[in-house]
Image 1 (cartoon, one colour):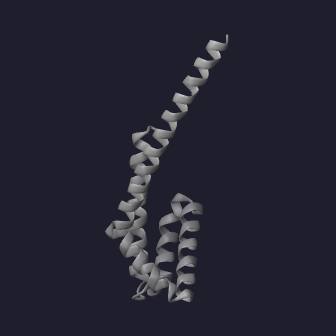
Image 2 (cartoon, helix red, strand yellow; image 1 turned 90 degrees about the horizontal axis):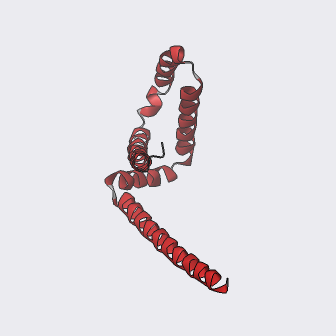
Length: 130
C-alpha cells in the first residue's frame, strides 16, 4: 500500500512538472505575442494617437461619448431601423469626425482593434473554442 502511495506521489510530481513546463511555454509564447503586438505598426500608430489625445482631455471625453453612443445604437436598434439610425448618427457627428485630431485617432483605434479581433479569432478557431 505504501509503495503504491509513493508511486502515486511521484506520478503527481511528474504531472505537476509537466504542467508547469507547459504553462511556462504558454506564458513565454504570450509574452512573445504581446511583444509582437507592441512592435506592430497598428499598435504604434494607436499609441501615438492616444498620446495626442491625452493632451486634449475634453476631446478625448467627446470621443468616448461618440463611441459609447455608437455602441449603444448598434446594440439596441432594431435591424429594420439600424441603417436609418446609423445614417442620422453619422450626419450628427460628421463635423466632429472632420476634426484633424479625431479621425486619425478613431481610424488608428479601429485598425488596432481589428488586429486584436483577428488574433482572438485565430486563437478561438485553432482551439475549437467557438
